[in-house]
Image (cartoon, rainbow, N blue to C red):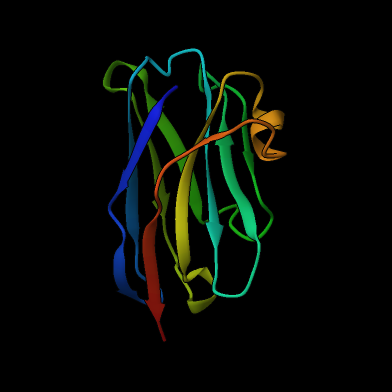
Length: 124
C-alpha cells in the first residue's frame, strides 16, 4: 500500500497561484498513475487532473484545463499540481490519489489510494 502526503495548500486571493505537492512512501510510484481530486463543502469529490507513470498522458477536468498543470518527479516519488488564475470556485480540500492501473482508472476512482487532503481557500 502506498501512503500519500499532500502539502502546499493555503489561502490565496483570486487570481493568485499555489503549488501542491504529494509525496509517496511505502513503495515507488514510478509505475503508478497519479492524480488530484477536490471536494468542496457539501459536494462530491471531483477529478481535477491525472498523469500516467511516464508523464506523457495527462487528463484535466474542463474546469481547470489551461489553469492547472500536473507534473511528476519519479526520482522524488512526488507529484505536483501547479494552480494558476485561481478563483473562489477552486476552494476545496485537494486530495492526492494513486492508482496501480491506468489514468482512466484513477479518474474513475477505481481502487485509488488517497492522501489525507490539503485545504485550498481562494478569497475574492
